[in-house]
Length: 501
Image 1 (tube, rainbow, N blue to C red):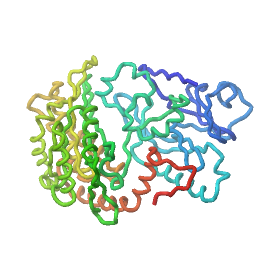
Image 2 (image 1 turned 135 degrees about the horizontal axis):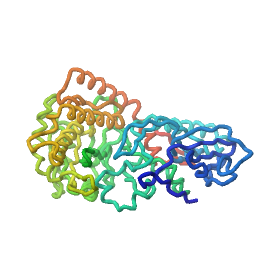
Image 3 (image 1 turned 180 degrees about the vertical axis):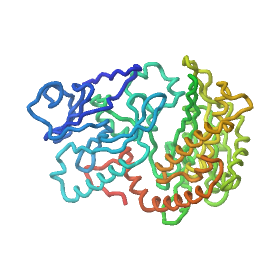
Image 4 (image 1 turned 60 degrees about the vertical axis):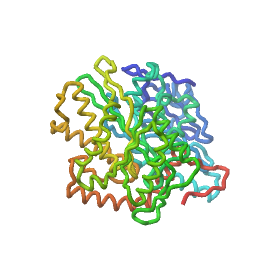
């Protein structure tokens, strides 16, 4: 049943990018358009998966049976078991959104859910209602922004990580080399991986969770809204990269939605709190090296209590530098230039951490030796403004190192390039905010223009109102959908179970 990797012009493992879906009365057949004898079938009665053979109906030979429907699909997301039914998720529409290190990157536009057993026909009325509820959750996932993938490269790996991996990784299936932290559909892939259908599986990059329904850390030290952002530069044969990370304050806390505009924050008292913080930063050290934690929260009110608790835990970790910077107090709503005060505090360590730089021959000239972890409460608006400043400072250093800028010049002197840079960071902030909060980022005009505008103030007000509505009336269902698709919630087929409220 082994499927040999499909060769690509660059010698890498390549996924099939055009597939044919043939629907028969008793099975589905999925095969490559490019290599029609490569594919598999899944039985519509009991969900068994089998490789294609000469009598598979559209496989390698002729068959007297013709499919009732034939269509083109663009990948297989995986399989999922609900109350009574089993379904295969396939991509029926995609959009190319750009390139990553020269490889095309796509976003899901639409999926189709193929029922793979007949159990629903014999289910009770209650089971049918429950199944319909979970099917609606799958449709919610379909409309989630940020479901990206590539057929030719692993977009979960940053440039420095790629350089550190052995050469053999390029010929391995993408699912084997992917960073599992950034693969939301990993729980859907197990069955197809077991049957070695590597060339058909889509791996995606993205985080899971909604704004007020995912806060803080779990007991393993994993945090809500953890995001690794990589700023890549390709110029005159050189490639350089700066990594930054963000994530919810890594202690145990929550914010219960209660129809108020700003629900109260509650710190959860637990004997494992110190261990949670230590696990979180130990994992960061193993992955990135020395870590500097930049806390942008307020120093008064609920945020102040949370910040104080965080600072107290960080005192127990002498190997991690903790920097507290009250963004709202120092910068207000419009004094973006005051962020220079923060940069002056951290610039020495930031410059020592550096960035990775690779020349045209593939030689590593510089390596990033640590990372800055930024947070506010949501890890959205204040965090994005701050990260964009650090990205700008690093980009200037990179261009100076390459020789594009002199030692006294900076990227802000290049008006068009600086405009593009700010636009990229503003759009990145919007993308992260849409995934986590359902709206565009606040303070986006600070990133885009370096100042607050009347239009930006109005846009922020509308986004704030939208967040209030979404937090209270829609995000709960969206969180249920993300938990279902990521495997954090498993449907109990033996019942009884309670559908989340």
